[in-house]
Image (tube, rainbow, N blue to C red; front, side, top):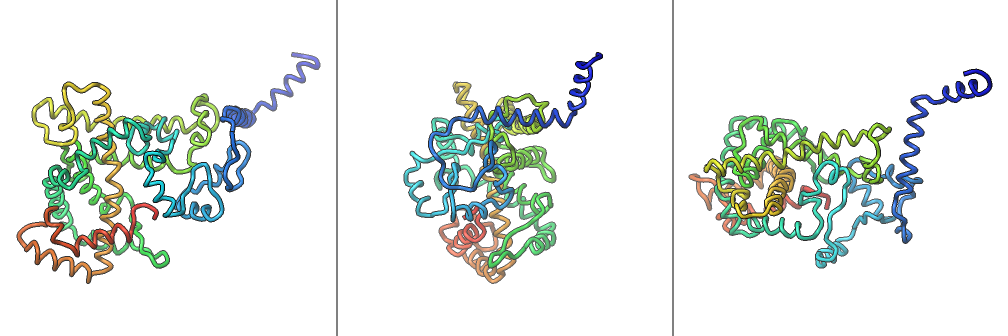
Length: 392
């Protein structure tokens, strides 16, 4: 092109650099997402001042969020109401049918595939169905005795054999894991250490056998590895402010080639793992049932040939929720118990003396012995209070 128009076209094209395209695209995403946000009908409660369009995304803590929330609780609130009052919480508990609900995470729920799990299921028919299934399995002392007695004994013996074979590793890791933060003792252990995996195999073995009739392998078990990876993904996907799509949900509809849309590829990768976590162990039990060799477990007891496809799907989702609901919390409590026994050997000696006097030396304690072991029960209650698995 020649003349004035050609010079203008050449000059204009010189400004169309990849950087300019990226800035323009990002600006378009933010403006459109802002335009699609629902109109705010009433002023928000007092809170940290936010930025235009993105709000408080930059204020959300990346770790130890309960500390930041406690500080905010002294000043403000937020649409995500952060309760810093035990009295207020007790009122919510008393009126749970009105106030109970689950947070909505676009990344973890819709994109990664956890929206059907118990932890993100809002109160309603599915939630009540899950509670019914769990109540049948572990909702009463008699149900726990019926379903868990043999499994707990079997998996505990396996754990003790592994520990006895390498007890020094356990002791050293516990002593190295203690750090002092003020007057409290906390646990800091490398998440991939053999020490932690020993507890994961114990807890995972109990849950997987109880749920699917699956016997965890010694060493690295592929199913435990899969589910632990999915749990890690879920933890990352639910960090407040980690993914902008949780703040601006309309971004999930934008083309993935735009800048800032990398979370979509990550979500697809994690969603595949989530689907495998739901399907692989369930299909294992189905095959065991078809071959006539299935162990009694949650899935085998609840699957019936006359069930609708919807009911079968709910059994599958309920089963997949059990590992995530029990593994991390139980492992944390177990670590706290072993830490307490190392820090307070006199307590350990008293507990051992009670067990020796009541149980003797010929067998391990069982659930049926709990009413006769008041000191041991008190220790377990204190472990849950002393090193709570959740902020309290």
